[in-house]
Amino acid sequence: MKRLLELLRNKYFLAVVAFAVWMLFFDKNDMLSQYEYRAEVNKLQQEKDFYTKETAAVKKDLKELDSNLNTAEKFAREKYFMKKANEDVFVIVKGDAKNSSTN
Image 1 (cartoon, rainbow, N blue to C red):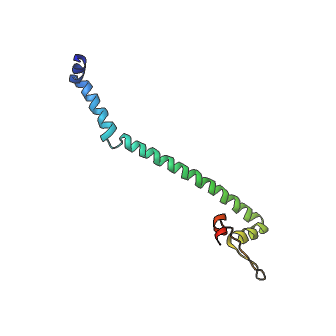
Image 2 (cartoon, helix red, strand yellow):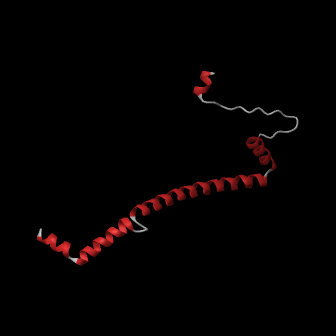
Image 3 (tube, rainbow, N blue to C red):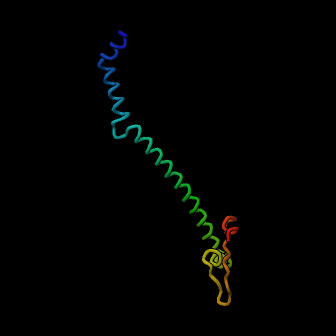
């Protein structure tokens, strides 16, 4: 008990404790802020990875479209439902098993 009282009266110990409390809870860059920043960085990294993959896929499609006219026609038909003047296009939408059984 006497040792604890001596420690609490030590001005250096009190200064270190006060500094640690200030840095951990009251500073602009406290622990909660650091946790939030780290979560934001992880979220942004996931978004970056997603958009990097999407960019690679779009570049691949663009390369295919530039290299082959048949690929461009196929792409236009599948993605934008384009057709030739003398054709009819039927779009078949597959529904859920739950929706088709109730109709």
